[in-house]
Amino acid sequence: MFGKREKGTPRALRAVNVIPMFVSTLAFACVASAGPDWDLDLQQDAGSTLGGAQKITIPAQVQTIRGALTGLAFQGGGDFQDVYLFQITDPTVFSVDSTGENGANFDICMWLFSYEGKPLLGNNDAFEGTTGARLGNASNDGPNVVITEPGLYYLAITGFASQPTGFNGELLFPQSVFQPGNVSGGLDGRFGGLWTGDGATGSYALKTEGVAGIPAPGAIALLGLAGLRAGRRRKA
Image (cartoon, rainbow, N blue to C red; front, side, top):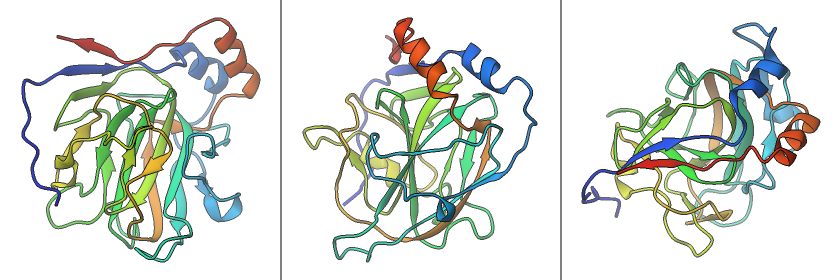
């Protein structure tokens, strides 16, 4: 069902997020390099859309994101996707990793989006022989995507084989994303808050690097008024 996708001429894409670097400097100039955990059990449940995303508000670097998908796998209803909004403070070391001990007790998938909902990176199995997933700052499959700018990003957590789609149900990642070891770059489109269906469920503890809580709402609003918004730049 999820065979290797035939790819044509590679397209080089560069991710440029909507919140520029100086927001990170303004909001987190004095934070430590490692910080506390974000535990979904202590918060309101993360939604399955960008509008319903759980906002990580720790005013420091985040070391671990803990949560669970609690739906009944493949039976409909319940909680099958968790979406978070956080800040990438250092793209050069950015990673979200569930491959460690107690990282996830189910077949987990990860999907990264820009603040405007453009699909950037996706992974199912980080390598052959694991059901854990890992995202770094670049793709190695499909469109070439590199995260180069600090700013606000969305991370979606699902179980195999629930994947995000656009507003018209179109797939946002090549289906080679389900091949072990593939970190796939996103295709054209924007996440519409829709999914291909339910997936596996369970608990997860994601180790993060280069991640922090979001800036104060006033800082985001001020930047929005200044018109500092950018999409994804392409190279021929």
